[in-house]
Length: 75
Image (tube, rainbow, N blue to C red):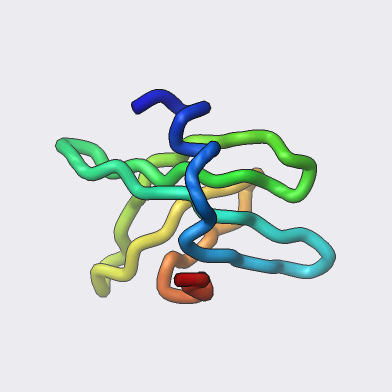
């Protein structure tokens, strides 16, 4: 699927920090794992999922580390 196709899907989780928020649209599994999300302006993004030393998944958005275990599921 392309990035635009992922971002047309329903929101599966949300994350808010400060006055901003992200809508997570999907996760692509493969050799590298990617998260697709829409930022507070409405732009679709794709980021690589990375792991801490204690195996906690996160991704980077504008220099901020967004932990996936702190995202709230919507479905």
